[in-house]
Amino acid sequence: MTTTPEPRSRSLFRHPDFVKLWSAQTISQFGTQVTLLALPIIAATTLNVTPFEFGLLGTIEFLPFILLSLPAGVWVDRLRRRPILIAGDLIRAATLLSIPVAFALNGLTIWQLYIVGFINGCATVFFDVAYQSYLPSLVDRDQIVEGNSKLEVSRSAAQITGPGVAGVLIGVLTAPFAIVLDALSFVASGLFMFAIRRHEEPPEPRLNELGQRPSMRSEITEGLRYVGRHPLLRSIAATTGLSNFFNNILYSILILYLVRELAVTPEQLGLAFSLGAVGFLLGALLANRVATRFGIGPVIVWAAMTAGPAELLIPIAPPNLAVPFVAASGLLSGLGIAIYNINQVSLRQAITPERMQGRMNATMRFIVWGTIPIGSILGGALGGVIGLHETIWIGAIGGLFVFLPVLFSPVRALRTIPEPEPDEVAGAATS
Image (cartoon, rainbow, N blue to C red; front, side, top):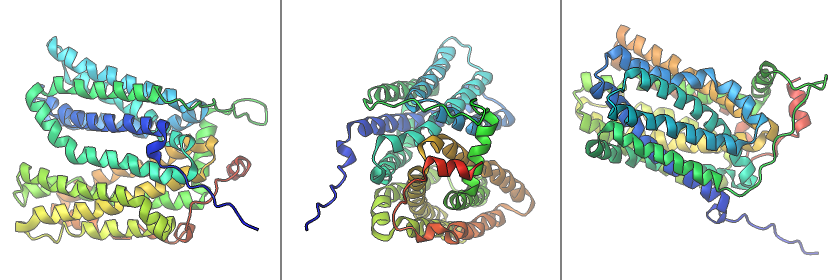
């Protein structure tokens, strides 16, 4: 008796709807690099704000990720994801366009930048949660890692080349008018999303034992319990959250340390960070291959182990070799971080039932991003008390141990991505 071999999945290059999603994300990622550079330049030069007002801009931009991530997960599970993606793009385009208009009319203020930053942050929260939840419904399960790898390639390429191109555009057009290009990139992204042909069924309403739709609070609680009780998701959340915590202790004061104590110039900083970002691109290109070769679980553990030691290159760097050491640290840690992120996100997406995708992604983001401001605040406080170099040592040493939660969990034994839990099992786990 002969058996018919299973057909190999076609390449995502031949998947029209994924190509549209990928094109949308690629365009908006490059456009975003303009705003990331232009907004602080507008605040610092065009508006000449105080240091407190300048710092407040970054805080306001980050607030939606803490305040709205969990409610966004509930809404993403209640609604179709593609309209949320399109709306997120168009809202961000409209708010960004208000900046050059106000500047041309001599009416631009820091308060408008605060409002734009906050609204854009809110739209980005919904977009990101819907985006991570939409991919598993668009491609086959065995294509999720490949899809995330291709999306990470675009993000990494934008991080490497985007700042340089953005600097040139801002120099030619001025910062307020350069933002028009980012607004147009969001319009283009929305059009690509609109062109996706795959029909998306609206989620079936989830009712409680009384036949009523559960409250927002109860659905948020269900998402928190689902992640907290799932051995794979719980360990991934712990490793990622610890990594973000110690990374931000280190990176919150890294530039201050390099500039103030080692006299590194801005040009040298840009060179070091650009070279370091190449590691993310290499990791994105290798993530799918190494997971296929060695197994997704061992690769997640290995990648989490390699990122930490790479950061030790920063505190041990001789003062006259700080730039190459920082670049090498970024290259090696970026390689590990990209491989880790692509595979752990793909694993999360593939094992989670469809009805829980939004809340799972929102809960994970709330947990792992919640450690970022804590690490940043602690890094700044320690830098003032014990010194910048000593604080960098603490962040680097702490990063050596972030892999322990995934090492001592079922993650390390996974060779392939397991099947998702049935909806009734997932529901029982949170009752």
